[in-house]
Image 1 (cartoon, rainbow, N blue to C red):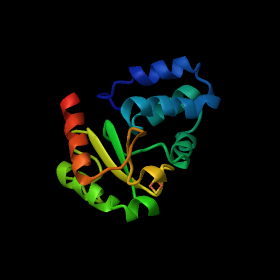
Image 2: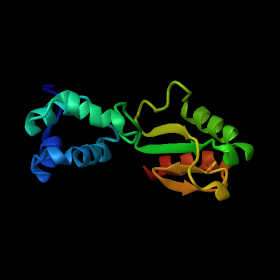
Image 3: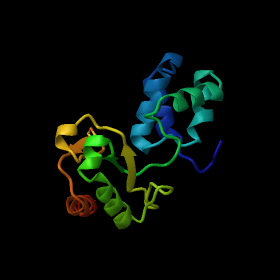
Length: 158
Ligand code: FES
C-alpha cells in the first residue's frame, strides 16, 4: 500500500457497492469518473476488500476501452479523424490543439492534467464534420481558430 495515497474515496465507493464482486465494473467506472483514470494504487485495495485477485481487476480494466491506466486530463478532447472529418480538414484542428497545449502523438496529456488530446475514427456525427468532443459533448463544424478559442474558454472557466 502507498502511504501517501488517500484511500478514503476508494473505500467509500467500495462501501457504496457493498463490496460486491459483481460490481467491479461499476466500482471502476465510479473511480475513473473521479480520477479521470485508474491509478495503480487502487488495485491492491479493491482486490483485498472484494476478495478477488489483482489480476482479475486488471483484466477488467484493460478489457474495456473506456478505462485508462494512464493519467488523463480533466478535459478529454477527442478530435475525429474519420473520413468525413478528415476530408473537411480535421488534421489542422488537431495540430492547432497540440501546438497550443504543447502535446504530440506521444504526449497526449498536459503536465497539469488539465487536457488530454486524442483522435477517434468516427464520433457518429459525420453530418457535423469536422467534429470534436470535449468530455463527450460534441462541438460541430470546427476550425483551428474555433478549437483555439475553445481551449481559451476552458482555461478561463477554471
Ligand atoms: S467521421 Fe467524424 S464524426 Fe464521423
